[in-house]
Each structure stands twice: as structure tokens, then as C-alpha cells.
Amino acid sequence: MSSHAITSSRMQTLFLSSQDIAQIVRKLGMRDSLTEMAEIIRENYLHWNDFDKSARLAIYSLYGVIELMPIADATHYSFKYVNGHPGNTHLGLPTVMALGALADIDTGYVRLLSELTFTTALRTAATSAVAARALARPDSRCMALIGNGAQSEFQALAFYYLLGVRSLHIFDTDPAASEKLKHNLRAIGLDQSCLDIVICPSAEQALQGADIVTTITADQSQSRVFDAELVRPGMHINAVGGDSPGKTELDPRVLQQGRVFVEFEPQTRIEGEIQQMPADFPVTELWKVLTGQAPGRQSANEVSIFDSVGFALEDFSALRFMYDKAHALGLGVSVSISPTLTNPKDLFGRLGLQSMETCTASVLEH
Image (cartoon, rainbow, N blue to C red):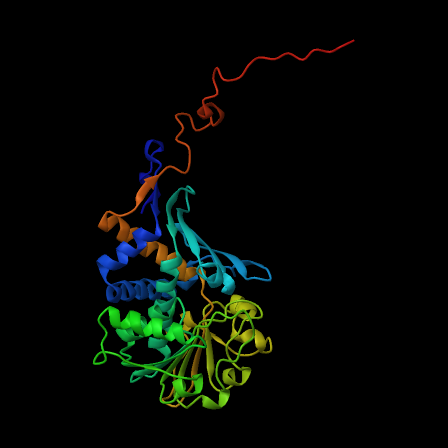
């Protein structure tokens, strides 16, 4: 993806629609999509110090949040525009919608514009798996999945394919959401012999026997999706739903029962579960574990908590992934989002206004 190959005669940007993203996933298959997405995310976390990072910019309203997530390395810049509006489901809209761009640093030329709603669900699940591989017990086979909405299938499949989870205890305050999740997993071929799916009447029952607990609820409030007393030694808690000020899922007492790991501490202090804790509450950034600079799980009985809010590095990785796959598969369309100029200094002339304007004279009346 060298920008030096660009000439003014072919300034085309690849555009990927939601249909293109879906086709990429269908052609690759969900297993390979999640596996390869997880690998590029892990690889970029290993190069953490090569990135120019900042917490995302957010605008909050009574109904939700709209965020801009920028990041760059020495060659590429990316951003994601994303919203979170829990009430959207009543309007027939997704709770989360996103789009993003990938550009060359040395020219600012935009290589890719892409829908990122599907892609965000994929990269969130892949990131959960990357963290769990480093933090969960290797013998974890049972996961409780609390919150069975739009991203739940992606989380379930990431842990099935990448961590070997074979038993899924699911709970949602909306029973229809749990039925939807079970139906979708069965529809792609995961029968009872592959993945034992148990719809539970409560979060308490879902946690019984669980090695991993994933919470991915959408409620825009300070929730407590399960009692702290239900945490057992050796659990890995993957807290995904809390991702903005005032939006949490875990009782603060849960955070005190184990070590807490985060993506980018300055952002998570504002948006994550740890917003409930004192400013000096200790956390470890995930990249330090992946690079061996900090320990992950230190014993089979230790409780680990991944306080995931979503970070721009993951979207950077996802955009690179989709760009490469779209080119390999011949998907997407080329669009011109910047004018092609014969003379780069003559922007006005490119409007083609010749012979379109009339000559008028100002008359001063005495």
C-alpha cells in the first residue's frame, strides 16, 4: 500500500458497502474472518509504540453517543465514525452504526472508505478473543454470555473458534433475543454436538459453571448485570458493553476481585468499568501483556477482567484487513472523492464555469 505509486490520473478510492463486507465474510467464512482479524489486531498491539494514539472524541446526547476514533502509524492514518444509540431498535435501526477511512500519511490520499457496522462487530469479537487467549485459563470451555443483541453471535463464534468454548449459557432480559442468538448459531451448522447452548432465565443461572463471562449489554446506564458474589476463582470476565461515561455493566466489587486489563488507559478511565473506581485504581494495558512486559494470568485461581471499550487501533487493523481482502477478492467499487486536476494549483478551473457567468457592471447612482 505504498502511496508513492499514486498519480493524479488515477486518484480512486475503494468504497466498501455493507453488502461488500458481508460478501467478504461469506467468501472467507466466519472462522477464517475472525482468526485473521484477531491475528492482525494482535500484531498491531505488538507494535503499540509505533502508533500515534489518542482517546476518541465523543459527543453525548440524551439518546446516545457519536464518536470519532483516529489513529496513525508512520504510513497510514485511519478513523472511525461510530454511534451508540440503544433506543434505535425501536426505530428499526441498529444500536451501533459505523463507517471509516484509511489514508496514506505522506499524501493524505484516502485509500478506503468503508461501512464498519459489520466490521466493528467482527473486530470487537476478535479483540475479546485476543485478550482471552492471554488472560483466560487455557482449559476454559464454558462461557456465560449476558446480553444477546446484535453483537452476541460474533462474540459466541470468536470464543467457539478461537478459544475452544463448547458450552454457552445465554441470558437476556428480552427472551426473544436469546432465541434469536440460538437460532442463528444453529442455522450456520453449530448443532448440539458442536456447541451446547442453554437459554437461562437469569444471569445468576447463566454464570453457574462458567469459566468465562462475557457481558455485552446495550443499556445506557450504570447497570449491574450480575451480583459480585457470583464471581468464582479462575473466572475470566470479558466486559464489553460499557463504553461511555455513565454506562457500565459491572458492580465495582467485581473489579476488586481480580486484576483489570484495558486497551488504552486514558480512554478507559473515562468510558470503561473503571470509571467507577478511584483514579489510582491499578490497571494493565493489554499490549504490555502481549509483548511480555507485564504478566497476564498468574494462577489458575486468579480472576481476570478485560474492561473493553473498543480502541482505534482495532479499527485501524480492521480497515487494513478489509482493504486487503477486498482487493484479493475483487470486491468494492472505485470512487472519485477528490477532483482530478491537470494543474494541481488550478482548483477553480476544474469547476468548468467558462461561459456560464454573465458580465455585470456596478452602477453608481449620483
